[in-house]
Each structure stands twice: as structure tokens, then as C-alpha cells.
Length: 178
Image (cartoon, rainbow, N blue to C red; front, side):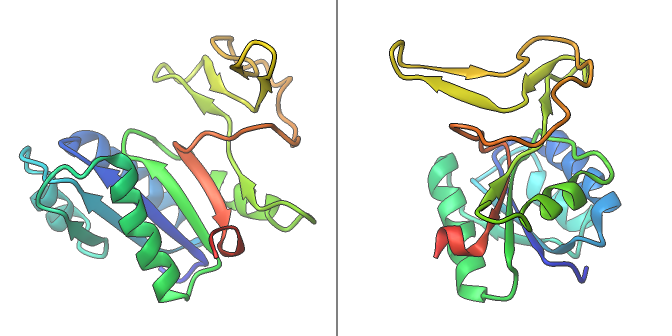
């Protein structure tokens, strides 16, 4: 791994999902510099499976379930302390990254004023959109996901500014966190 992206995945008893996620990252090796899995005290053999199938992945074992946020904070502190990589990719363990997606996300960070990029995110069926950007309806106090539940017809295949991003696949510039 020699790329500029530090990937952070939090796992808690999600062995098969985490292994699938890590397998999907193999198609992104050009962009990835380091992969870190923070494990929240899994009892399903996740730690052993990651060590066996992905020995190049750095593994932090919390020993207990600290929660998703605190586990991400542990990984982000390591990312910031290391100081080597310009980009942090927060990735849910049940996410599968398509080939070329990370390259597109990184290229979006090259635009002026862009500190974070996110991909279109699909439901597990791979056909219906879960997130393709979004806005907040301040009057109603709700978040609206563009295209949610609809089949992807390509009409949302463009970059745009959004009111919020989701954290299940979020690429950040280091400066956003510093």
C-alpha cells in the first residue's frame, strides 16, 4: 500500500461484513496507504479472521464495545498523530467499495473549498439509492436524501454541494480534522 488514503473501519461482531469490506478495498490499492480496523470487543472471531486474511491491516483491539463514535475517535487520533496521510476515509464495516470509487472521491477533494466527499450509497440490493446527496429541511427539522429508495437512473451522477454528508463512506481532507 503506497497511496495517500488512510482507511478507518470500526467493527463489532461483523466478521463477514468486515471481511467483505476489506476484500472490496483490494481494488483500491493504488489510493490506499493504510487500513486500520478498530475492533470493539468482538466475540465472533472477527479479530482472528482479519489477522489471518489481511495481515497488512492494522488492528486496534479495544477489548470492549466502546461504541461507534468513541472507536472512530481512537482511529482518527491515530490518523492525526501519524501525520503521514492527507486523506481519511471513514468506512462502515458493512460497506462494499466499488472499483474506482476511491479514486473519484480523492479527485473531488482537489476542487477549491471542498473538504469532504461522499459517494452515492446504495441499499444492500445494489440497485436502489440510499444516499446521493442531501439537504436539511430546517422548517420540518428533517434530512432529505436525494433519490432515496429509487432505482439509480444516472440522473444524480454529478457533483454538488450538500447540506450534510453521511459517515458510512466519508472521505475527509486532513485539514478538516486539524
